Image 1 (tube, rainbow over the protein chains, first blue to last red):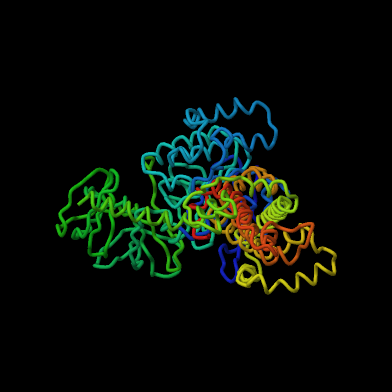
Image 2: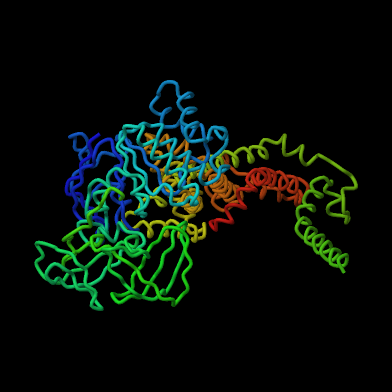
Length: 357
Length: 270
């Protein structure tokens, strides 16, 4: 299915929720809507579904204008962040309800198959309230999948689940999306989730669509600082610098050898992903000596906040490491791993990625 | 220590029960005594047990028709109240429209007005329209008080249901009437029960309107009961029996909705 949004804008009273944007979804693929809360992900999704009517602009599905067509007459499926099921119906009836409404054949076996796929088979005769959160969300997913709608919208479906369950369900979802032929739109606040789901990513920030493209492409070549910031977790280190010949001069006299063409002014911002900073030196790295201010362990990664000559930076190391607070630390940076943005925040030069990335 | 506290508690409970039940007990007690015993002696239980008073009520058409009339207009009123209040409450809970909060409050102000205020307009209007002494006349008069109450109660229950359920149903392809009856109403059935109960109770005990707007054909039991005063004095026994029978429907309804009422109180809308 081809979904095209043309100059879509959404205003509620005096507040603008979405600034005019154009978006053509890649059919049959997963599109991740990435952005912080308040970025307009849910608003955009509701417009796609037809739950809300845009203030201006057109929603076009397969070359037909469907702007203002009520959601009942569109063929979409949606899963919410909250676990939304029909509380008075059993799990079976919940999953079967879109099928029953369309009077489809062999409902029984189809519900059974879906329940099996999502591991909720033993609970088919229970009420949703008698299930755990993860199971309830599986029921909601099963109901959305049952419809086999050409457009499937998922609004942060995993955010209310615990860590383990989220990983497990995300893997299953990736497989389900790959197996199906629907166009999937998946909203999330987490850059890692976007990378894991792959497909295409649309980066939203405060009601604006900043960039849309293949996920890896957007990750590697963010158009601007805002995209890079939205697509980095922990936040990207942004350092003010000055262009001088084939190098960027950073605060504290640190010289970052990096040639950039087509810069209009010498004021630039250097962006360094936390994972680009390392503890081990190699031939081409430049050293950033500093002091550990804070070290925290998240999952199997260690985040170190360090005060260095170029300012405060955050570094991410894989594995669990111990750092004394206040201890001296030297961080090493491959110059070609840095992003360079111009004074307006547009990308001047992106790192060169080798096959490892 | 423990035992003394236990005794204190028991004593308090017994006292409470005595005070709460005594008036009702006394009425039941009276309804089984002959009139001579009622007026002449003090007895805690009927010395000469009799069912004559109940017999009178169940055989005298002017008595039992009072019950039938009351039940007819109360049932009409409850059904109409709910049918009107359900969509109204849904609109108030789901949509925002110009002046929605004012209209909601204005509805409630109807409840704040004493029934007597509306008595004269209703009397005049019904006389002109020829609605006097009909069941529907009383039922409609009571709507002025019951619809706002039902809307208020139901709106509270409906706002407790996430809006996403409505949207999911539309996405699934439910039409509005089908969604409302098969998915939404079951979710707020305790609210419907509580609203129905309050409509029933108000309409059942309301005397002023019911008596003024009826004369013969739709005369309610509360009005019939005032008839027992005659030249030969009060017929205490029959009055007490009628009183007992008046409590019965209310007691039955309370029995059915008792759990829901607790829930309604917890939601802060009763």
